[in-house]
Length: 171
Image (cartoon, rainbow, N blue to C red; front, side, top):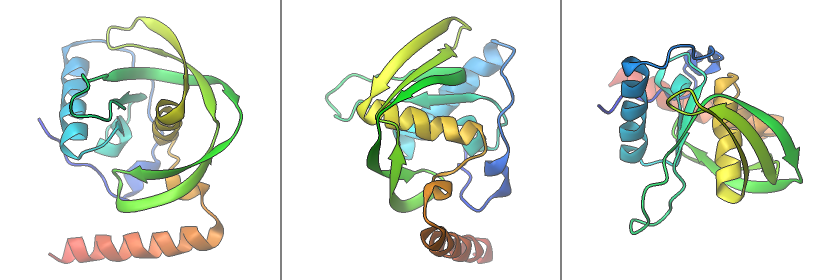
């Protein structure tokens, strides 16, 4: 089921996710719904807080070609345990439709998390996968891409997104 994605400045996007403790059918359904929602958007990552669900859960699929097989990855209760280097990447976000901004991120990250069955894993990632992991992990902490911008750029983007939200509400 495709679920509605929250758009900035929705205050629920600032709520940090809570640890996932139950690995049950409800969690598996949520993951399935998140994947369907992300692919329909279309996007390469989606965090539960973007759906108004306060859980420390995000999904990622950076397979960029329609010909490539899906590479859906599930991260539950993730923790970035190491970062290395620095890079700037032009990022988008499903909660900021149509917006792209240059964001400074670590070039390489090591993350430990649980999979959909509660099994622990550790992953070293760079390139697009590393960027998306950092971006989605921010969502779990109530942080958004706008928080990585200069004060002036942040104000401009806040104003533009607030006008959009007001226009959407008026319809």
